[in-house]
Image 1 (cartoon, rainbow, N blue to C red):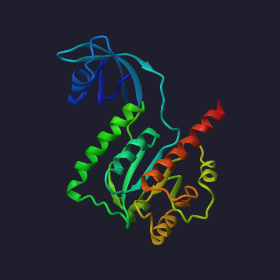
Image 2: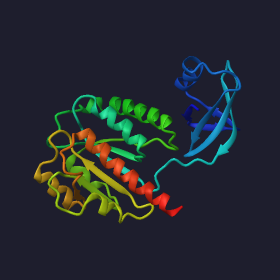
Image 3: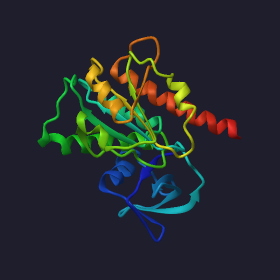
Image 4: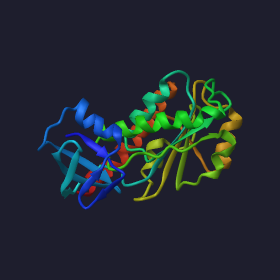
Amino acid sequence: MQRYFVSNIVDGHLELDKDQIRHIEKVMRMQVGDQVTACFNDEVFLCEIKAFNPLDVVVVNKLDEDHELKNPVTLLYCLPKGDKLDLVLQKATELGVSEIILVQSERCVAKIKKEDVEKKLTRFRTILTEASEQSKRNKIPVIEKIIDYKDIGKFHFDHAYIAYENSTDETFYESLMKVKDNESIAVLVGSEGGFSPKEVDYAISNGYHSISLGKRILRSETAAIFSLSAISFILERGEEDAR
């Protein structure tokens, strides 16, 4: 069933933007009586199309759905080359990330000009919205800024990790097993070429723990997806154990 994230629900009627209206009418070619789900304020509602010209979609009832991780998870991702970022944004959303912070690190080849930042962020938000609809999320991940590496210390998390192939600390699994419900988690992943030793030291001095993602060297986009997959697996495995 198609899902839409709406800006408001007034007296049981959805407020849809022009792109959503076009999608219902022209892309999906829905009919009166067809049903969709709508998300508003992190809650999910079953809705039905009552009329066209103008389009009228009304709430049938609230659904008891929660497809979110129990811990807020942030991905700090250093800008990669090409279209890898689009893939990571999509997959990170599917894996339950709460927030994505893009980082300009020492070894980033990709650059985004200051005058292009807002245009890029708008496009990135579209990717996150579409991925949230597809994966039946209750909420859309937040992406609000592109920061310099030196600013990573301005963000605070209960558990923060930097993916580093030369890490000799405890394993990622061992560390994740110590996370308690509702504690925030962040993982910092480098672009092509990873991090310089100076950058790793800087992250550690700001509360990050270095973690290895296994015996093999992973591409930037693989490292981001793998680390979020591990977090999702551990957190949701805990939910299964509690049942």
